Image 1: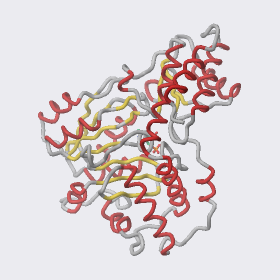
Image 2: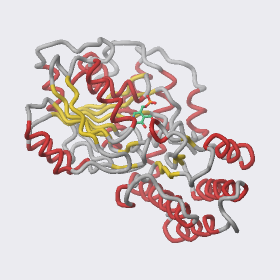
Image 3: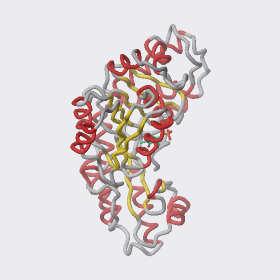
Image 4: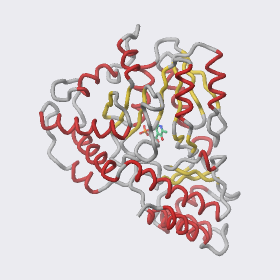
Length: 381
Ligand SMILES: Cc1ncc(COP(=O)(O)O)c(C=O)c1O
């Protein structure tokens, strides 16, 4: 129950075990085309999509490297660990990262973004949809409107949302959106996925300076992604693409809206159950709490390592530590991908029982009971 990698359906493992086709074969081209077509539906875009071997950070680096030219200013919303990483990548690619620092646990206010963009000439605005370190969701639709007002490119990290929460790439005016295979898409780790708008492709075609790393140049990939049967750029991770193909099929078989409702129900059950035993969540308000991951502050005196070890070794549930400045102060529960009502109940039970074993919760039962109550009312049957 960590925010990626998530539990993988056996259908996906079975696909991994299939013979490795040549990357130039028509059979493989068909599989890649089908995967890209599934991804277009999941990204909700009519633009170009890309599936590239690497982790989510490759997606982030490609997005930034293709946007940034030397000296370009990029306004980076920084409300957690991954916002910080984006700013660092902007700098590494010769851009000037201007960070809009948001307290951890808060979402960015689009009005503040507007004020900031009005102050200077920016190439792009970059934001994380779900900041995995805090469990906060940013209002990407509103940020997209602000980006359009100032005619800047809009880069969105959807690593911790795509496939589990609604991401409307076209409608929200996103120019480059990236995610990865091991989170709510519930495939194995190893694939970065991106969507790029027509504006972004035109921008790439008219850049004055070449993209600073060859492997990540979107235009190098574009030919292959538009026509997998005819073009070679690099050797694909063939079996990882089989896996992604199956995982995206599973997402669409469930149906996006039903999948989002399942994530919403599980997230609510986890949040309300922890509240029932007096825990404070990291997001400042429930309206900005994500449906894919939840972070909670420890009560005073809980030792993070001992706590998580107990949850794992005694009760068989593996949860995540706090990231960055929340290390030892908070723990996180990932509830994304193929997560079920039973997973939520088992996790809540394990966490509550551990707090009880350590003397922090007298008379355990409230958390599990709350989770059951919420799931009974909201979990789609
Ligand atoms: C929001 C967000 N962005 C980027 C990343 C980086 O992804 P990866 O670990 O696959 O490189 C993560 C990973 O957890 C993430 O949660």
